[in-house]
Length: 288
Image (tube, rainbow, N blue to C red; front, side):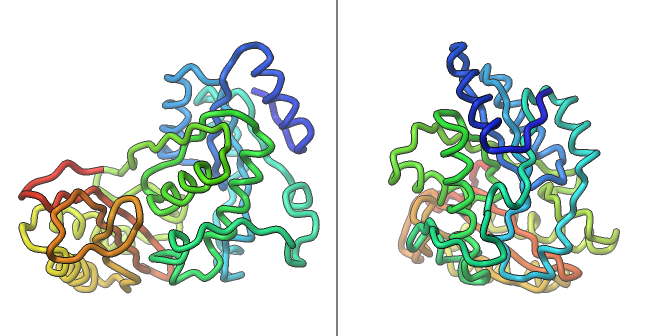
């Protein structure tokens, strides 16, 4: 496994792989790797890609300095997991490589209007500007590739797809199913900050989604149901929404379409998110 730390080496490595007739598969991460990340690597390898895994905790997508400071960092463990999973190149750029002016504001920002202002964007101002800006940089440096993102961060996936379409990147965005533990909790790097009791309470997010999918009620009833399930479990609810799968706008009770249910909340000061496909055309759906 190659270990890269500079943009110049990263760009050269990817260009060399394409010169050899190989397709690069980029797996962008913020480190603290878990089985969810490794499933993206597996998907890329199954597609025959040369897997480039980037590990960079992007400060521009954090609106809370304390949250940034608490974000888990496990570089030695990550290296072993990446190599064991068959990653071809592990890229860990220094902050000065990615944002040379930081902590001063970076003058160039990429913003995806409307899609980045809802849901997570409403509760975390500037978050998706930071995401869109760093993803733009990752894709620019990597060059033509397939880029793998987990559906657990569904809004991020929608934002990235729109960014790639609007800016005409030579990139195929591949969305991969959410990985869960045996309790149904969506895998997340943030889960390590939860106590045993906190992890139990956090399962209310996936349970709320399941009950909303099983409901035959309109979107308003399903929103209320998800909200109640999480609150009863002791989750501080940020939102519980049923939205159009592409525009992320809330669905009305009259709409009979396949949409997306998204939930977010705090458990022990840890922000957690989850989502699932939801079919409003009839009772019973296929999840995630």
